[in-house]
Image (tube, rainbow, N blue to C red; front, side, top):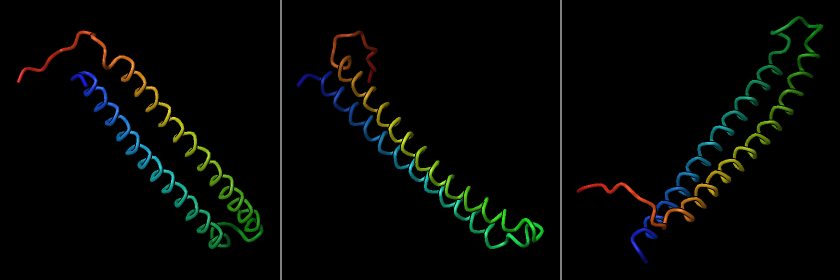
Amino acid sequence: MSRQAGGARLMQRIIWIAAAIGFVLWSLLAWFGYAMLGWARDFAMVNADRLTVSEFADGLLLAADLLGTAGGTAIVILWLFGTALIAAIAFAVSWLVRRYGGSDHPRIEVLR
């Protein structure tokens, strides 16, 4: 294996490690958003009579339940799109490195 092919292989490994780290961070962000949404929904449902006048408490309960359900669904959909985007970027950059990483393009050599 040539030195350039080894460098391209190392670069691909770095790309996929970065994609895995991005996936973990994106998943933690989505989980945090989902947890905060659940907390806000539960808070509004428990304190509906304190947050508004009693005539509107039922409406607040319905709105909190609807927003909690729709918001949770939206967070899962955004997580899926973000995950697909991370994977697509990793595939594209990995393909570019594989395609152009081992060729004889001029490079800047670092002096040791």
